[in-house]
Amino acid sequence: MAPYKRPFHCEILTPLGSRCACDAVSVVFPAMDGQYGVMGGRTPLVTMLGVGVLSVEPVKGDTLEFFLSGGFATVRENTLVVLANECEVASEIDREEAWEAISTARAMADDTDEEFELRNEALDIARKRFALVQKKGKDRKEGHND
Amino acid sequence: MAKARRILKHANAIKNIRTITRTMEMVAAARFKRTHDLAASARPYTDHLAGMVADIVERLPREKLTHPLMIEPEGVNTLVMLVITSNRGLCGSFNTGVLRLVIERMEQLKESGYKVRLHVIGKRGIQFFRFRRIEVAREYRDFTDMPDYRDIRDASTELMDMYLDGEISDLEIGYMQFISVGRQSPSIAQILPMSDLPSVTQTIPGQDTLPYDFHPSPEQLFEKLLPVAVIQKIYQCFMDAAVSEQVMRIAAMHGATESADEMIQKMTVKYNRVRQSQITTELSEIMGGRMGLE
Image (cartoon, rainbow over all chains, first blue to last red; front, side, top):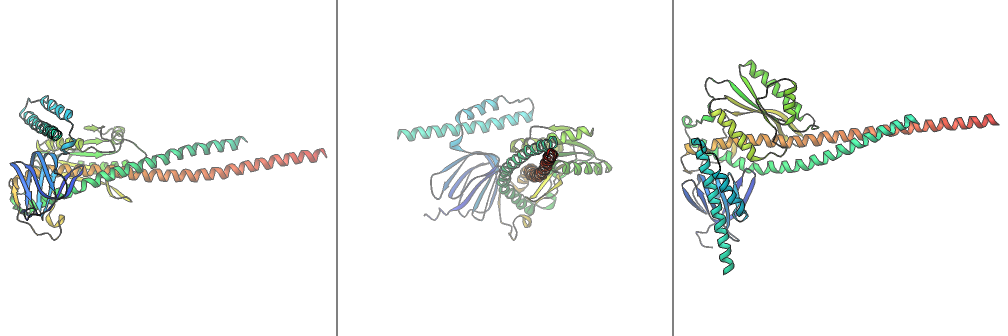
């Protein structure tokens, strides 16, 4: 194993339970100010999560992808803990339901500033979620063609 | 024979009740397992969240450790008491224990000059306050015995908004605290203003403070983390109540099944005694009749 691929422990937790607990060589997650990459031996960190895809490159096996919509992440003692508000396994997101979520978000009221903000937030999450489903579908198709 | 038949009928009725209580005990046991697992799966998230708050608290100077959720609004003396009861009965002292404590607390608060606004979860609690003609500001009937996180998050956000808007000065929850399978206790939890912040020594014993990178600043993180910590605290109360309800129902139904067994046994002995005495009477009548013929 290359020296920069020092493994570290990664845990993804939600209020409903653990979504992933494994040893990883790298994790990329959406923070509030852009994508963050974590590798073994990183200095301790506390940050806020944004909306997007978290990908885990485990020590063994294929890359795992999750869709996150907000939360917090912390790195300490070679362990990354992601406290996600909501977390879905990317491959398990239903295309129809993701499309439906965009329509639902569009239909939300936007009369007050607060409502407008909430609607935009919901729309942003729904769009990014659907984009991930599209990407997954495309990847699968390309995989079949190969 | 009429008396024996009556006893037999009574015993059969008790047998039927026993079947129901035994089934309810088994159903409650299955539900307990599910709710307990759900509560246990939420624990790591809660612990890590508390650890994160503690790490930030450790780094912020005292004067910066303020948040609107920690400061009681001035000039407001309205308290929201959120009461968690069940939708169904036959769960021992689950509802009565909580409701008795809530009534006591309400009297204390009224004496201290607070106006109490009741928010009640569960049909049992709603019926109780209606019967006592105590005004309920908000009734929640949609919560089941398996609390849904999203519903609780929405309700908590609504209550936090009321607090931040200065509508209420305090938020307390009356619920059944789950201590262990053998011990549950009715409790009142103070939620807002949030006063008991976790400390590093409380969450990670012997852990030195680490040089963290904070993105954004610890102040901004603290501001965002505290509402999540409040939601998690409220969720914990709901989970405790859900687990306690099932444990107490198991105990109540187990007790009822045992009592039914005891009654069935007594009835059987009584029935046999009556039947025997009837047979003896009939035999002596037959023998008396035969002796009379001789």
